[in-house]
Image 1 (cartoon, one colour):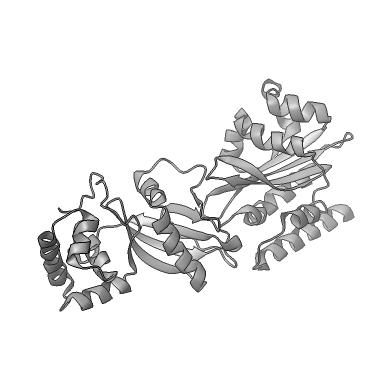
Image 2: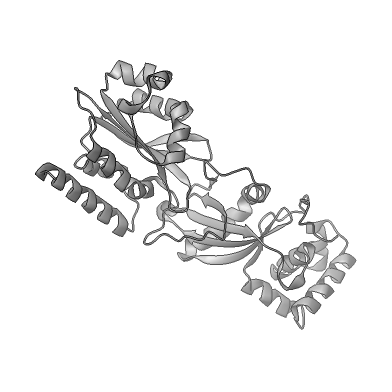
Length: 340
């Protein structure tokens, strides 16, 4: 290894170490500047995937004119190469793109007019598999990225992802493959899903809970520590883990579970409203059922949970951190229907 390559590797390791120990939101502009010591480039940009709006937004750009980086954000994800980049999760070098694919707006409006002689693009993923953004680097003046450049970008991809991930938690990543639904409640209140998440009614119902989920996220943000909750939305029960993240966001990992203690979903809804201090009349109005039906459900709740009275049952619900995040009589999804 040449002295220059050794220095570049040292710079990459130093950048990786700094990002790993940085507990504060990282400045993307500083990261790009430090990256240039590892992978020399003419122009570079880190873009964040905005799942709420379905588009990429520039986190930081070094050298690119604004219209050019905007064009990259708009056109690269539409190019056939992008799906391959998402699948392989490795750097894509411009010089290796087959001639049959060297067409489209990203070539016609960016690469050819700017006379770039090479480029590197890398999709960025969080440790839990969420797509969070992309890195784009361009070379000019005859320079072509070499093998070491590709290795450096691949080496730093996970570290660069934390720069644009609104749910990047300080310290070691919290991996939880058992909770397959992953959402981010951003500081702005936007509720985001991964770019590559398959359509899933249970995930969509949790997103649709809106303000109810935001309120639970606000509890976690205010306390500054992770917590487990039992959530109900659209007649679905979730075991959910919420954790504070960089930038004021909250990461939500959840899975669909049956109600505890043999309760029906409707009984669990009644218990959740008892926890909130609601009367039988108020519970009936909230759920669209008669107060006498509420009394029957509550009798079942006391028997199944072993609670001596309404107050003890409310304490049990508080221990579970039970929350009705939709707070309205929900349409019922097949397979998880509450009793009437």
